[in-house]
Image (cartoon, rainbow over all chains, first blue to last red; front, side, top):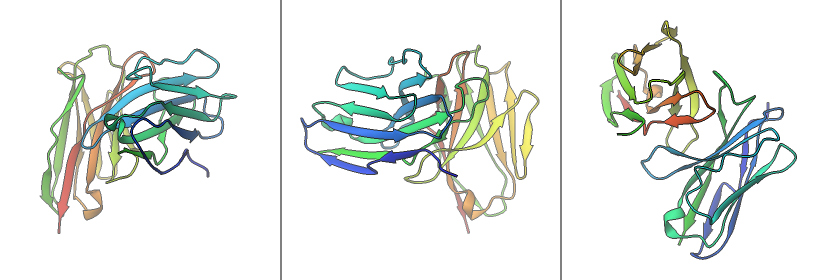
Length: 115
Length: 109
């Protein structure tokens, strides 16, 4: 069956440019998470969407980062004026309802390189 | 102190060996616990949830010790294909999952 998909798989950009990363969660999953993983580091929580509730943006590292989720499905993470420290793998995960022993299913990630 | 701590390893073990990883967590209110596996340049995948009474899935056994605030993962009869990074994941009363930085395992032929 279809899992979580992300695009692009790789993105190389120049410092100062804006980038947009896309996540398609598993159909029917109401909870959607964005994480960032830098080389050799753990997953850093960025943002959480649950249904129609206001998202938890507490993990976004700066106001250059923003995310949307349209129609309770597809999500886009936008990074404005990219910096070299933004280079990382950006992972999206979805789960059925965001509760209890919900299993998070991860997409393959977008590897972002800022030159 | 990090919310979830793991020994980064690497643990280099021969095929057939038994290996154990521990993970400690700081929030005593944590409610759910998981082990994920992450292969090199791949996304994390759920290996197993960790239940209060401990649970086993084939060669893998997970234990939870709430009093000491740690969870463990035991792998018996290690295979080459077990080589990966094992992520400890803890969840409190909210929806947030806190990931450890992972323990790297290399199973040697």
